[in-house]
Length: 414
Image (cartoon, rainbow, N blue to C red; front, side, top):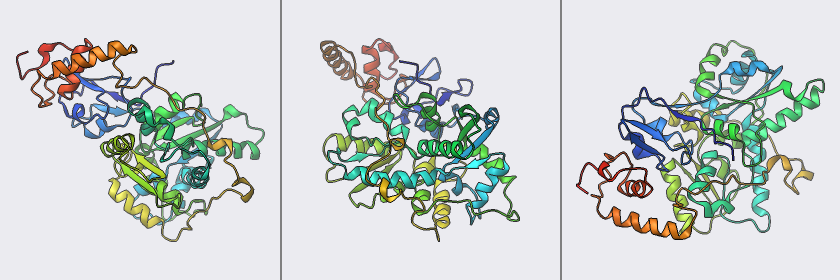
């Protein structure tokens, strides 16, 4: 298996060795060693919680610069609906889309447009006989990787629907090829304007055996300042927006779930809340649900670390922009509602070694579990982080695995 390419990296020159990121990492992927944080790449899910929490800006997101699109002859922008909530006093989405064209893009395909189609087919998916419920949305790549690593028993609950970003890239390229048959495949480039680094990881690594149709991922925070120079209330803009309330609502937590037109749903955001929900689903404590929408970022995609605006303000702006829009501008043709086209589906879930697995050998795992429990009883149990691990339990596991020395505990003589 190829090495997983992460989009959240550590700048060790800025790291002071404080334990802030250590305490907030949802998969305990961070340790403090030799005065600096270290990230275990096998455990990292690119949720960007360390970026959000680090007081020294020692964690950073990796993404492309807009200049990376210069290698393509025909450039397609794929703006996430979150982008529209970044601008103050914006009363028409068309100004944002016009600004993207003025930046040099040849065409715009709104991700919110694809989201409305995904919502329509999700409703059909839920009615399919044999569907495991509750279905868990696959739109957030952090959630899919988190389930694979920490809740592998729930992989069968994941909705096998490609995220709107990916659907938008596929449909956009198909449209361009149809309208410009003279263009070669390699001359057409798609650029997703993203609120979070997890989408970068998705594009870089593909999705199991599926290769992404997105060519570059740029940050909303970069595009924002470029667009400010191109957007003006004096500009004459064409009616470019082709999204409705459903598509724009995907930017906030609950937007995807409410679009299934079914009250048997749950929507949770923020990685800690997400883990609580998954724990309860795995334990059978949440029942009578058909659909679960989970977003790693607080508030949904509006809370991504590659945005500019406060997520609560962005959410309020999007709510204002939705006024006057139709519920949806994009629904499949009637004859296409009998089945879900292949362009919307993926076959396999990415598989990783569960982070709870101690060994591939059952007997060895049992022995290690016993040793961890025995050693843990000797520890103070205050989870101070002074040893460089996030908790006494994690420290005990590190010691048994040979990754830490018993004397690393500073609180108690062992």
